[in-house]
Structures are given as C-alpha cells and as structure tokens.
Amino acid sequence: MNKQKIIIDCDPGHDDAIALLVAYYSDQLDLIGVSTCAGNQTIDKTSKNADNLLRFFGSSIKVAKGETDPIKRKVKTCPEIHGESGLDGYDFPNYKEEYDSRPAYQFIIDAVLANKDIIVVTTGPMSNLALAILKKPEITKNIKEIVLMGGSTTEGNITPVAEFNILVDPEAADICFKAGVPMRMLGLNVTRKILVTDEVVKEAEKIGTRGSDLFVKLMKVFNENQRKFFGLEYGPLHDPATIISMVNSKVFKFEPMHVEIDTTDTKFLGKTRCSASKPYNCDVAVSVNLDEYWAEVYKHLRRCN
Ligand code: RIB
Ligand code: CA
Image (cartoon, rainbow, N blue to C red; front, side, top):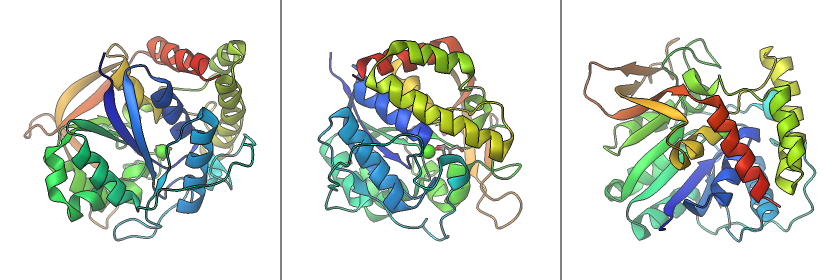
C-alpha cells in the first residue's frame, strides 16, 4: 500500500513528541521530513528536542530549524508546561546534533515541490509554513492538505479566546488559512478532552517498550506542570490528534466550516472564528472517540522498541 507522504513542523513539546512518534511508526504514513518552530520553547531547544526524538526512533531525518520569532511578533514560549528544556522528563543519550543546512521554510518549499499531494502537518505556530507560502506561493498547488493542531471552536487556553499555536503567530495562521489549500483543524474543543489520565499512564506502563517508557516519563512531568500552571488534573495530549486523524477515520468527526483568524491587536487576537454559514475553507474536528484515540497511541508505542 502506498504510504501518504507527510512533513511535520513542530515545537517539541511533550505532545509534539508523541505526534512525531505516532507518525514515525505509522504503517500508513511516510514521514519524509521534520522542521521546527519556536513555540513551547526557543527554536534551539525545540530543534534539539526534535533531533533527540528522531535519533531515539532511529530515524536518519535531519531537522530543518525554523525562525527564532514569528513573522511579525516576538515569540511566547511555554516553559511552565514543557520545562526549561522544552521536553523535561526524559534523559536522552548524548546524540550528536546534526541539522538540515536549509532553514525550515526552504525545506518545506523543497519537500512540497518534490512531492505532489504531500500533507503538511503543523503542531506549533505556523510561522515556517506561512513563510514558505509567502516566498513560493506556487507550492500551494502541491499540498494535498494542511493538518494543524490549533485554534478552537469554543474557548482558548492562553487567553479566553485564543489557543497557543495561533496566538503566537496569528499572521502566519491567517496566511495559511487564506492560501486556498484544504485545511483540517484539530482545536482545543476536541483536544482538551484527550486527557493523560492515571489509567492511560498505567496502560502505557504495561506495554514495556522504549516508546512506552519515553511516554510514561514525559507524561509524568507534563501532568505535574499542567496541574501547577493550568490547575488541570491531567494534561491534554493535543498534537497526536493531527496524526491519529489521518491514520484512523473513526477517531474524530469533522464538520465543514469557514475559519478565519483574528489578527487585530485587541482582546480577540488569535481567535479562530468558526462559522458554518460562510464559504467553506476548513474541516474542523467537532468530536473525538477517546477509546480509539488511546488505542492508536498504545499501538504505536508498542512499535517503538
Ligand atoms: O495549545 C496547545 C498547543 O500549543 C500544542 O501544540 C502544544 O504543543 C503547544 O504547541
Ligand atoms: Ca505543539
């Protein structure tokens, strides 16, 4: 069976890490490249984390590092949740860091031009993809779909209305949503239901692979920080929703909507305005089957040994 070619632009980040793992070990997806953006931590830290994860998986992919800041704003990081390293909780071996010589936007341009019908996944601020589209608009013809974790049909997590990935670079999200490429949005309205409960951690512990050990150690820190910072009992595992929505159609239900990004410097900055009465431009996740979601996570943790 032909695997679907994808690239992931991410800001690992505990949940990004599990998204990368599921993508790498999927038998339906061909992860041909990874780029990083500043978000959960600075670009150097998210890039080191992505590099560590790919070495841990045994991948030869070289991470393409993104910009230090969003398109027109200063980056907001989130050490409260992801820690000083951006991926606190697991001590990786001292892998030799080796990066793609191209900046992330150039890697994205090259990967898309070389692979018609590729899917671009973003699990952080959309700065790199937006830059790639600005510099080479014709790449949009080759992109089968942009699948993003971001936004919300209801409330935000950083402000009452704005979700982190969109809020950090609202201009970038605006460029992507207006690029004329099919969009699939997995927002907080569904991802906040995906909680790393004690039962989930216990199930993962039973698996006994390197991947499950990584998951358990990372999630323990992730949950502690979510409790301290957001007052949540368990952390929501947002980013793997992008990958799982592609490998198992039973997990999420989507509705066609019009999504536009608020880029005004008001209290609405970063809001994803979702409407069913304006022209369609995005499939928006509206529900999640949690049993199926976690079954997919466990399946891929088993493969990571
Ligand atoms: O709002 C949640 C999103 O912001 C996730 O992608 C998390 O990793 C952070 O990037
Ligand atoms: Ca992320």
